[in-house]
Image 1 (cartoon, rainbow, N blue to C red):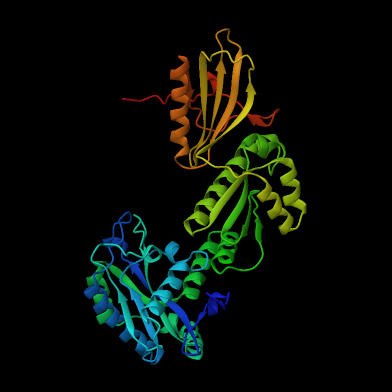
Image 2: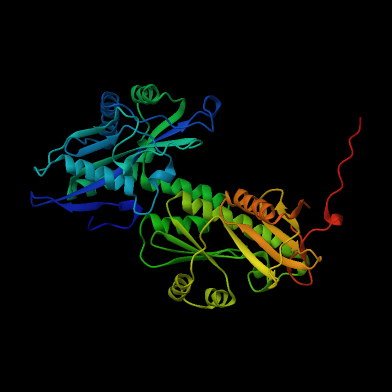
Length: 441
């Protein structure tokens, strides 16, 4: 692709055709709002349509667009007979929409441009082109999207883009016949169906995120989706930092001890460290999950005092360079070793403290092990980096105990335990365990 504009209000891509003029494309979306009263929120979106069904539906949609936009017969138009959630559409570089345009141009087979309606269907339940194959993830509602792409000469597409951005959202309601065709084709219970632009979808998402105090997340996503030049960095009130360059998001990961001693929590009173770290962990998970869902590669690195200083004082370019110098954290979990007895004597007793929060679940496991003489053998904190890390940590500790014939005890205090003096996680004692609730008969 060449000559790409980087604004979602005018995201037009050009390619050179042998007919001595440029073809450009401009995409839009049919937004389908599902009826929550008649839709399973954990359900899977429908399979792609067959070729005949996709062709029939494309005819309905093209007829509506022709009326709404004041004539589109001079333009090429391509529809996939499939539905996607917004995380499949809004990804760095908008690859699904670009692939639709490329498929249309590929259908010209080197001949001069001629407007045609192209519908993509399949008899196998999936498309052979991976870039447009819907993921059909459970719980993708309540909004599903059917993308489409206009292709035509430069000037025609530029005029169309202005009309779409100015009027499509206001005038984009589908006709009753088209609405019924969509419902029947996909077997959906839909409340509302309307045509929107990519810019409209982005604006709606921004409003939703801003209303929930996630405007910095929007800034990171928008920078990546539309391939803005340079670096976008945000520093959040909870102490979280994210830096986006290209389709990568860089962020420091703090263990509790690091967070409290030299990280964002270093200025907090000791009594506030528990709530402060929970807030940081909650925000970190929310941002990382959202960035990954929208197609960014989240690169976590273990924080250190030097990186902390650079992030607080240096330019974004220097911060990015500092991130790239640190190996990223890979795998499902991280082990922070506080003490390890060099004698390598076998562990005979292991005490595992489940450091957890009622809302966030597992934050860490503090592992204290003793040798046969009752001397401290190891003190470690195990942090899950991925949701499956909780299970992996548990399995590893169980296996470790089995291999050394170690007695294991797991304590569940139901909260984060730390030493206010040392500003560090600590193991639980029996006194930290909540008393069982008495049952009254």
